[in-house]
Image (cartoon, rainbow, N blue to C red; front, side, top):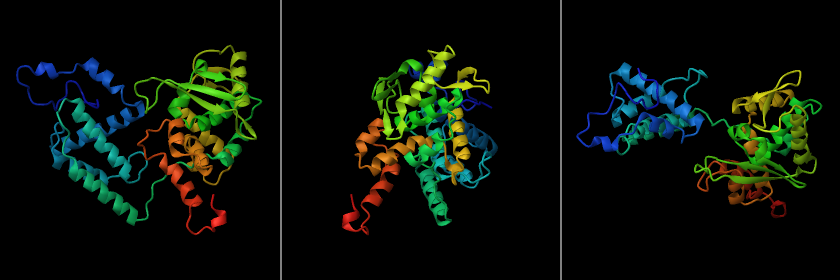
Length: 346
């Protein structure tokens, strides 16, 4: 059974093509390069869903490539009635959306023109969302690390140790960049510029800059009167230099003796934020993740009345993205609440 998202030599291959079909053939090497155009996390998720689809089709005696509208609908229906082996809980509507995207991507990469008919599958996902809502389910989102929470997390960082200085740098850079954890893990020392009033980070590529033109993101030295981003980042850089580390990845593993090791992954960045939240004894520490750093700064900016386009540009969200609005709308609703006395509105 193939275990690739779109295997080159698949057991379920498309029908034989007529003469001249070679003009529409993509080699295995090119297919692998095309995969790299998708974010690594998304690629892994797509591969997992596609493998599930292949296994389900084999059990059900259905053809995965190409899938009929009925087969796609039945696969989504099967997922609706299933539970995740990882969490033991039913799959969320967002998970079903991702599974459907994985199936559509598999067809595209296998060379099928057009997309399989997924109208019925999408209707099923809508029904699933409605059923979950009636049962009291609501999407779980990472708690935004706003400035008040950021202060509590920074207080857990032992700045007498290099690992503590690294953790503090993770917090201020994650907040200041409105950064994805993968972006934080990828920052190199030579992409940092520290001046009197700014910490500037060059982001060579992001989800909204897939052509990799790169852009500088400026973080003000004082992201709050009592939080000096420049001092925090400079202290960590000086500590790395004392260990002979002046190039390569910024965020490094550091053992209990203070020895600097290899670069960190985005998952390790996430674990550090979760540990700091637990150490701070936050009541909702289980909801605190590295994504909260990305969510916290736009939440604070919206409270100050910063226009959405400026927030989206700084955080490298697409101009058409609705994700940034999930952080902005709560602040707008509070500020413009129709029940507030006029004098209390800003």
